[in-house]
Image 1 (cartoon, one colour):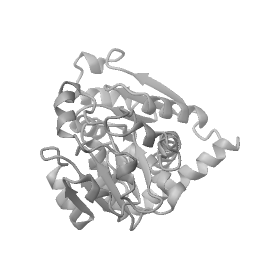
Image 2: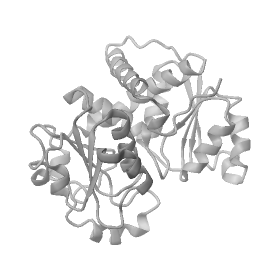
Image 3: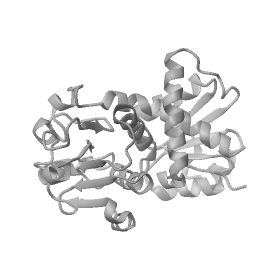
Image 4: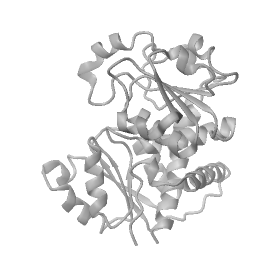
Length: 304
C-alpha cells in the first residue's frame, strides 16, 4: 500500500479534508473539556526544521504531548541533514525510527524527495511553495465562526507566495471563490492559477478583491528568506495594507485572518489586528494545534 503523505492540500480529497476539519473541532472541544485520549501513546513524531518557527514547533510538539506521544526536534545543527547527507538517505534512516515526520524547509522538491523514500507519513510544515497546515487551521477557524466555506468568497491581499498557493489549492478543493490582489510581478504560480479556472481572479486593486468577500487574509510582504528585499517590497506593496477602511468594503460580518507573525502597520493595521469583532487571528493560531492533531490521526489511520 502506498504511504499517504500531506505535501499539499491536494493530497486530500474534499471529503477527507472536511473529515479532518470536523475531527479538529471535536478534538479542540475534547482538549478543553479534559477528555483527550492518549491515542498516540508510544508514537514518535520526527520534526525536521531547516526554517525557524514558533507556531509550527509549539503546535506539533504540544499536539503530540496532548495525545500521549513524543516529538523529536531536529535542526540542521543537530543532524546529518546539515552536513550534506543526501535527503534520500536521511529519509530512509529517520523513517525507520519514528512513526510520522514533519518537515519545514525551503525548496518543495526537498520534501517531495524525502517523502519518496520515507516509510512513514510525511507532513509539509512549510516550504517556499506551499503551507498546507496553515490552511487546515484557517478553514477550521472559518468553519467555527461562519460555517462552511463552500460557495463563499475569500480575498487574499499581498504576495503570491506559499500561503497564496495553498489558498488556491483550497479554492479548488473546497469550491469557493478566491480574489487575489497583488502588485505586478508578485503573482502566484501561473500554472496553479490556470488549474483553478474561474475560482480564482487576480486584480491589482485590494478594494476590488475584498468587495463582497466573507474572509480577508494577508501575510507579510517579505517572507522568510526575502528579508533583503524588504525595502523594495514595501514600496511595491504601498496601498495593500489591510485595515478597517478596506474591511468596510467586504461583505457584512466579514472576518480577517493572518497566518502570523504580523508586521503591524505594514501589511495590516494594528487596530484591525487587535479588533476581535473582525480579527480571528488568535483562534486561527490556536487551531494550528488542533488541525494538525487531526491531520496526524488521519495519516496514521490511513497508513495502518
